[in-house]
Image (cartoon, rainbow, N blue to C red; front, side, top):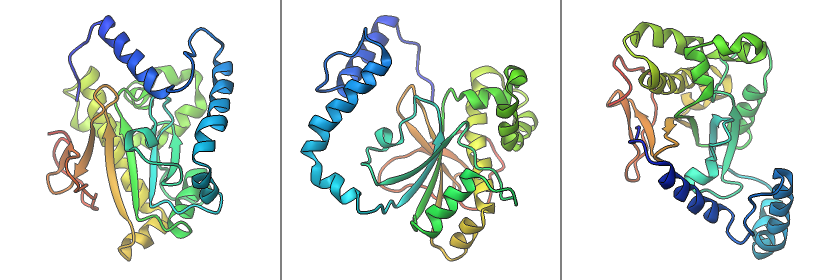
Length: 256
């Protein structure tokens, strides 16, 4: 999933091209306070984007009917609608540090409540858990030293304890970027297992009403790999067929 190191000049040119795409129609925002950029963006949206798509937003105001629940990380570099090229109203999104789904318990939580609503009320047909390369939360799972002064983050990442133990047991021979890569991938599968413990999800799976998907997005390449239970590993998403995660875990490394 990793790509050869690129020179700073090339990276700068690519960043400029991306900036032009994202800020199309807006004067170059660099060199001004960031909050002012946000205000300018709001004005651009209201005056140009909204006005040109007023009927679309009026339809959105009448209700939502997303088909997919997309669970991913809070990392600012991840934009679910951008990488899937979806419109407002098409994805129901949960974001948190580490794209974590706490296992079912009698302690209410925002993730569990949102999942229940998505399945029982919105009737989503697919649930995607999407991890990503260079995930800071997974770096902390590998090396919890930085969490000494972050007790709430440390407690939250206890929901990835199984990920840490799998990494310690199965991948003791790996380190650095190689270890982080498989930890990111394993964590998505661990969270899929947690997802299956949610009562609404368990019931929906029993009646064949929902499909689960395990994805990993590589920031540096734009590629998305999906876990394929038939192969027992992640593979690039190609064509129109998207692998569906079953209940059986693989016994080998998740990477091809």
